[in-house]
View 1 (cartoon, rainbow, N blue to C red):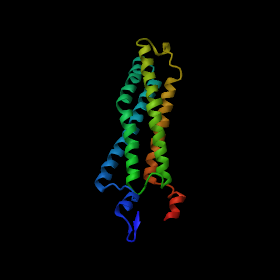
View 2 (view 1 turned 90 degrees about the vertical axis):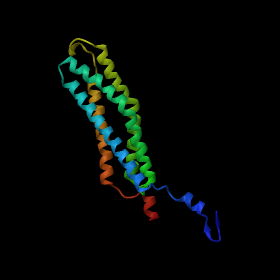
View 3 (view 1 turned 30 degrees about the vertical axis):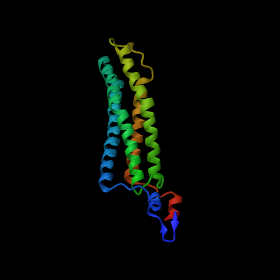
View 4 (view 1 turned 45 degrees about the horizontal axis):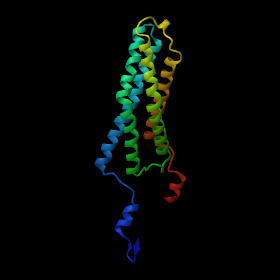
Length: 187
């Protein structure tokens, strides 16, 4: 709505992008960093447990490692995998970076979204599968356990997740690629 004196304050406020106050931005950034680094640390812990189970010749060590995985996952995967993209989205929308203005922000957002879905659907299921395998074989030697590809699968999933989370950290620090072409022209 415009009149002879220009746009009304309500009309110009609706077009102005949301900006976080400095205190809100810092608080959101701290939450984002804690969630993101916590998620990365969780995957390092799962990798250590998976490698321990893969490398051991002691059945009790293998069972302990596999029983610990879903305890970590159930307590941490859901909150960390939801807080990380949620806080990242608030930061993207409430700062000059915006969500799709820069390639690195968009790539980071899509990687984090894919990791959230994969963590809550596939990873959680694999961790419970490992615990179930340990429960199926409460006693006996490793040779008598039929684990199939599970020990390797857990190592591979953990390594892929760690690589993905490390990539998002590198993107956040390096901020490669300038603004998308659409926004370069607007400048």
